[in-house]
Picture 1 (cartoon, helix red, strand yellow):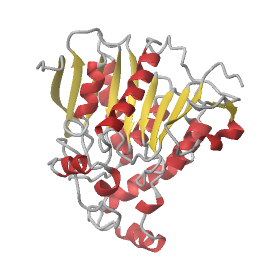
Picture 2 (tube, rainbow, N blue to C red; picture 1 turned 180 degrees about the vertical axis):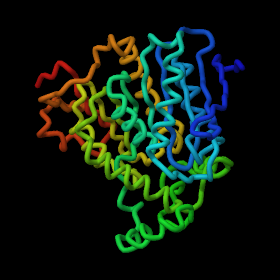
Picture 3 (spheres, rainbow, N blue to C red; picture 1 turned 180 degrees about the horizontal axis):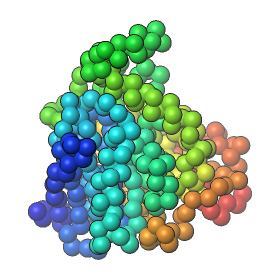
Length: 346
């Protein structure tokens, strides 16, 4: 259907591993598609409602946007918020995204991953499995490591890891209320609580173990990231660790990479902040996509993967500095941007 925003929204169910899985898309109605964007949603949420604003904004900017609800989330099959295998959800995303990319009308379009929280981890693992197939990614507060505040005490973790073999679906992992700690704007927080597909219970044992293991593995592979990316994180995030995003930015081999750390913002940058803050974040996302989508097809992209020997950090208020001065750029006095480009000069 076509709505007043001059975009088309469509839904489709597919079958994967014997499961019926929900997919959706937002398409520009009256303009040429600039590139493809593939959404990877976060833990306990879904695509069609929670990421609706993202889909609409990007489609209005000229991008074809595709999403899938992973197992146990949204309108897809599975026990709610139960992830028996993190690797399966990565592979499910790869399989669906590939069917879209291989359509004749999309084969020559640039393609980007968009990962939010848990979806950021999924996007990075998609890149690990398909290292040459993507023009880049937008990583919004990626779950490369859970914040310490989210973790149970070590003794509790040890007990839970024994129980998981017998009671994998039990909802008994003690943690802080994610919604209260991720969504800064009380109105946005209430919107999530009224979403019938947003899970609000304690994490299930197996789900918690799978996500914990995924973040442990990711944290050890940050230096293997080689595609272009825009990395966004709220400085006051207590759900995923902004310090690990700093480490991802410094460690990644990508030729083209940018990091924006937003002072005072929380975890849900595109859905939990004030309208003004959300507009700022999306302006940064669309600016980056517009720049990178000019690269065209994956094979012809100048943003290809390569090792880098030098990293430059650029602040909007100071001259460029070398990587050794990187920490001095993180100051709570305004929006902070770190950027590394292929023609690095100091």
